[in-house]
Image 1: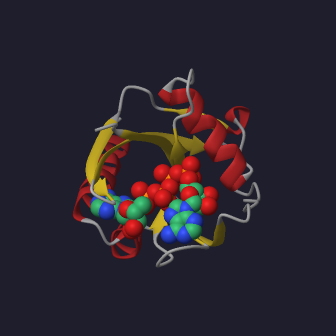
Image 2 (image 1 turned 60 degrees about the vertical axis):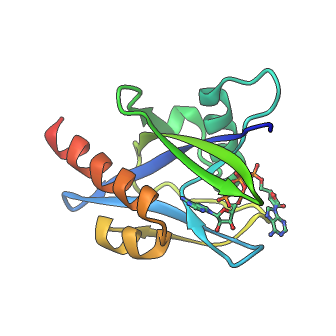
Image 3 (image 1 turned 45 degrees about the vertical axis):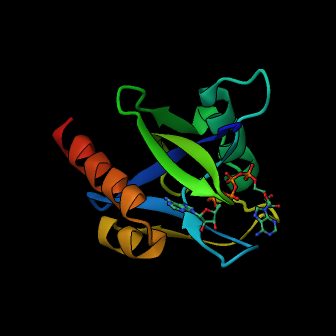
Length: 140
Ligand SMILES: Nc1ncnc2c1ncn2[C@@H]1O[C@H](COP(=O)(O)OP(=O)(O)OP(=O)(O)OP(=O)(O)OC[C@H]2O[C@@H](n3cnc4c(N)ncnc43)[C@H](O)[C@@H]2O)[C@@H](O)[C@H]1O
């Protein structure tokens, strides 16, 4: 069975010494919240996809971001009985005031603290990735 593969960026910014994460809410389905991410197209690397999807979904380009490639996490879950892999890297929004521009795929976005993010994302695996990411960012 073909594995679905997606990748994205855990976008964060620093505001008054606090880390805030960018989450997007889908316009479809049950309107779940995730960082910007999407399906890897044929011939694309995981990082190329992560950058393309972040620009398409949030209007943030690679030159707006500092990507932390040394922290990479994979999620594995099933969508419609098919296995799906999602890869994330953290990326700092260099100008914390830069505006997010949504596409039609999402109906809302929020900048939230770790605890608020864990409530919004609802799945234990991405909550765990966010907690590990915060620990990594605070230690480096
Ligand atoms: N129901 C729908 N109605 C209309 N158009 C739709 C649609 N679903 C997808 N689309 C279309 O597909 C495109 C998305 O393509 P992309 O933008 O390229 O890909 P994606 O982010 O990987 O898609 P998706 O939102 O489906 O993925 P996720 O794994 O979060 O989510 C997939 C499922 O997995 C669940 N899920 C998310 N994270 C999970 C996790 N950590 N553990 C377990 N389940 C999880 C989600 O709740 C969700 O049910 C959109 O443009 C949209 O047009």
